[in-house]
Image (cartoon, rainbow, N blue to C red; front, side, top):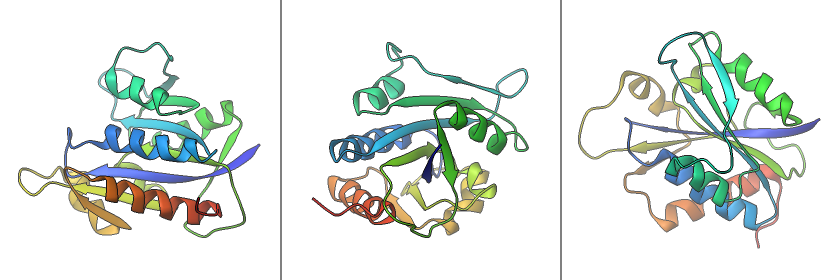
Length: 179
């Protein structure tokens, strides 16, 4: 089983570019030889909690962009509060990956989990928590509670410099020398 740190990407509200940021980070990391698993978590629309692996031929732009950026898997989780973390662990086990929680480095790793979620921050301490802020507009309830816990806060729209800063931090966490 490969142990991988988790990087969370949250935002003040929907449609601020979490998926785009995830794909931009994944593209840089995979170009450096790092295996990336992308994860999207949301509350269930109807029915019970669960997860599924997105298909490479998915037409939904956010998922397609993650695969095009080099993600080995894209996992979609619909879960209530009590099921988020157990379902994430279960899905990752199917890929041969175990989460390394916390923000301490422990040697070199060539795998990372990039996950879109504010709420998962309530369940674990990630290696890095990135929060996208909007200069205007409403802030959702989970973001009000978690944004103060962010390690990096960026203003929407994010820039190439923002991506470079984040990728450098992730490489430090992984113990990968900069190129």
